[in-house]
Length: 90
Image (cartoon, rainbow, N blue to C red):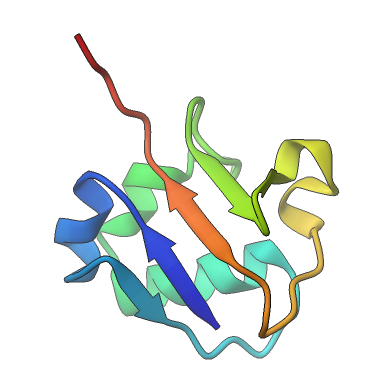
């Protein structure tokens, strides 16, 4: 699955997208695999309870997972998966 990453996550992941081979089919499975690949990602996206940090957003096919099944949302290989960290602007 191709995961697009944004802002400071690009520095951690080494580019604008990451190819992730996940055994599971849920958003949490893909994110877990990404943390295995890029350990520094963990503190950027998860809290101690392994919930997404506030203002971290995952979009599947343009829809925020908070409007779907959250981290349990099922994803397919063909889905567009985007991961956004908290960002500030001015």
